[in-house]
Amino acid sequence: MTNPAFPLTWLYAPGDRPDVVVKALASGADIVLIDLEDAVAPDRKEYARDATAELLSDPPPVPVHVRVNTLDGPLAEADLKTLSPLPGLSGLRLPKVASSTDVVHVAEHAVSAEGSGIPLYALLETALGVEHAFAIASAHPTVRGIGLGEADLRADLGVREDAGLDWSRARIVLAARAAGLPPPVQSIHPDIRDLEGLAASCAHGRTLGFLGRAAIHPRQLPVIERAYLPTPAEVESAEAVVEAAGIEPGAQALPDGRFVDAAVVACARRTLALARRDALTA
Image (cartoon, rainbow, N blue to C red; front, top):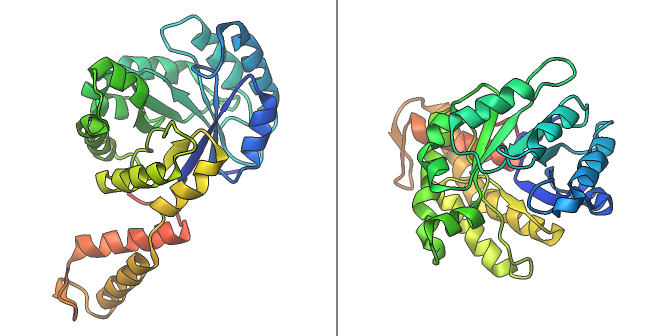
């Protein structure tokens, strides 16, 4: 089992509901996120950890990441100790990361049975976390991605309108790319019935530089995938750019008036790779 080259859909499932996790694994999501934090009541935390450990004792059919409990609480250490050595764990999602120190501490303790570091994905959910975005993204070689926890960030900032989060969104996109990480994944759209709103939000996220989105219900998955995969027109345009570059290297103008240079060709190749779900390159 390997991570998909372009994971576009990340589906959350509560750790204390093994039946829901099983359905999530069969949903078609690129990655399943088992949540031990927000989705689990305090009196079911231990059960959720044990159920997740049982599931991950063997590699599941799709990659599984686990969102552990808050790093400054008593439960996170047990989560890391129990889950890190298991063969079915593909990554750890760290909530409420506020500094590079948080990440380094986890990296030192999250080690597989073979001794390798577990891929880490840091969630920035406070103003302080966003302020430290690049330091967090570049804190350790095992950091493979950063993202926003928008519900908590909205509360921390006192933001009511969705547009009030756009600066923070752009900030983490820049921080991730500056650190050599893939583009971040969008935060969840909380209304599972509002598929039109989800599509519009994904389209906006794509313009900001996000790639893919976390979901909380399987019905959201095809909307997210459609929004983030290149359209036929985008594929056709990219093919024309790559074909022209193959015939005549260097900067040039296409018959339709577009100017093509190395950066434009790189973007076109990336579009085609995404359309094929090929290996993502920086």
